[in-house]
Image (tube, rainbow, N blue to C red):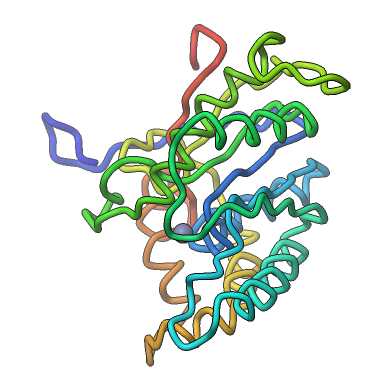
Length: 250
Ligand SMILES: [Zn+2]
């Protein structure tokens, strides 16, 4: 995260905002809201379309609640949190929370989502072993991020996961990875920071279930977006790793 020669924080390059449609594929309800949702709010306010795709319904996420009850609660919370940032389509793929496996079945359904929604940009979550602060990542995040990167390529190949009535889609220009320790790009979220906070607050049952007595969504999100903003000369920013499917990348 620091320049090898000077020790000063790297300056983040602004993300390309010349696009119309994005698809965000993440493991759990709440994954977008723990950092990326304010960026989504910015883009939807610009008239862009963003679709969310949840690989699981987060049914194993609340210790004191039975999974089939949690599934309903968290599905509703995710739909509301998406609405707050201007997202009106949330797909739920129904994989089992906590034990998602990287593999062909997962790539197949994500590739289908890419073909159906035809995004130019695909957003996913960090699939590296740790987060930028060194905190250990979680298995579902790693499986889903890796599968999403591969499914973008699969989606463009007519003969991979060939399915009658669903045309291939090779129009994805980049995959943007939120929460990545390899991020070199960022987006100014100063104007939509509060919408991002509100979208995280919408996961009330989940946050209550965590049992973090003093958890403050605004303080938590600000603790990430303010240092990131400093790397762009703005109040708040969100960083992304860019994996380009066009070249040269710039
Ligand atoms: Zn998660």
